[in-house]
Length: 153
Image 1: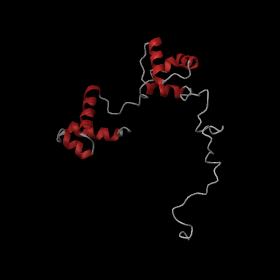
Image 2 (image 1 turned 45 degrees about the horizontal axis):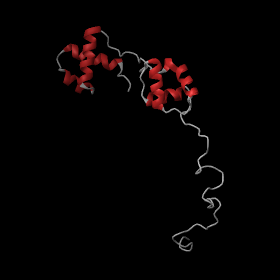
Image 3 (image 1 turned 30 degrees about the vertical axis):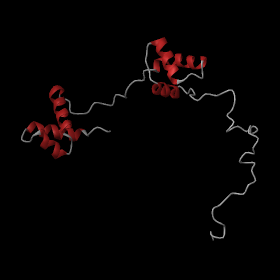
Image 4 (image 1 turned 135 degrees about the horizontal axis):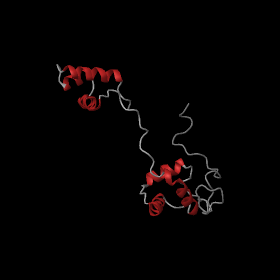
């Protein structure tokens, strides 16, 4: 959400300084919330500042300083789960992370989360069908329709 304009803040502070209107009336007049009027007035009284603070960039990544360790742990055991990676990082650094944090960090580090197994799945593989039945591509059965083609003209 974007901050309100400085012009609006100045007009609200000026109306509050005049004191002929109550704060709820000022909020209704300028179509802002009462809590916004209260916060702007408190900030102005305490610091004299009217403008909004610049965006600080959000929360810092907790696992960013430990990128080299995460890369090493993934190289040592590439099939470890996210929870296992979190536990290993916590054991070595004392930084506790949850699996969603670890998943985001792996994505930022371009480390794959999906694991490759020694054998391919029989459902998606191109090898022979183990059940001995022809696959869907090999079948020559005509498609079954509920209605005959004469109905759809």
